[in-house]
Length: 455
Image 1 (cartoon, rainbow, N blue to C red):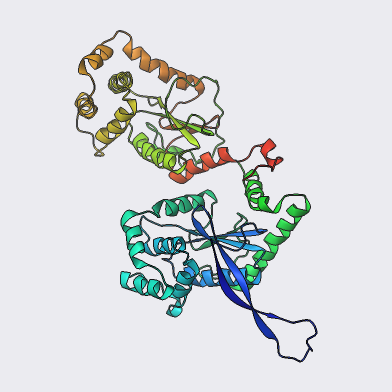
Image 2: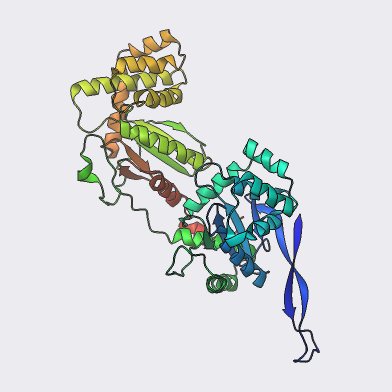
């Protein structure tokens, strides 16, 4: 479905005398409803220059930049495509959800143009104000209220926020031209780029696209090939050594070192979840009694949600490098309990419950045996099978075999992450973990020279 928006453009008709008054004729600009990730698109489906516009409709410069980008599209109706990627800073963003619902009703540009008419581009945040905007734009407000109630556009907001971080763009409102950050620097960074600067950025991107077209890249592959070129040019990630258990933080923080390679192929058995055909496998070595591992666990859970089809996670048992005998005995007990839960198909339930029970409070005052009983009470295991497993001769050795395999591979500290055959010790933030996954997802050498079947 397409919506034609009238646009007047001055034209000199053949045979008209130079002194005659110029006539204006209408020109159509197309808003495509062949959505890219359910995002509104202005311009042709394939264009040499694609602008990803990230906005939240909560920033004062969203609407001025929207008007400037729309003017750029009007000047270059066949060469510029704008993808409006609404994102969310924290959870719900009612104006952005309203914009996506307006797009679903085929009234995206009328909605945005009504917003842009507000004095000094003030964004309407109250429900009554949004309702008045929708009425003027011819939008069914009841469907917007239903969208808010059901959260049917939240997935789009989350995907756009993840894509914003994946492309290392600035906070909204921000632009990417064929996947690249704008090269122009302004003295007042808090002001939106004027149309003249957007024209200069367009000229750079269009010149690069022309070179690709001259090299034989089809027009429909320009955007995908531009992204691949940018990814292939990225330097390997430099991740800081994070805090590890048993080592004072000041000794290791702010230290940038090259991540060592894993010494042996066999990293020992792990507990895995995620798609078996995932392109990236992230192994993390942790102890259930480590607060830092508990924090890492939550970050990895968020990472798995961000890359649901491309990331597989593997948990490996590991103890800190230097611990006393009593601590070792306590850790053996809880890790052995997790393996016995695994025999009843409950390892990941044990894993979730263990970090929740053991780290509800920063100070752990409950003895570990009582904590294990609290964990097992949440799992509904067969108690007889569990007791037979725990009392089986050599059950401690099952845990130590896994710990020794990790140490033989080169893992020393907890927590430690292994990605792409390299060891990254210490706590990691979500952006750091995301950077590691994205680096592994970059195109390989052969892919860079085989641009076919990109879409």
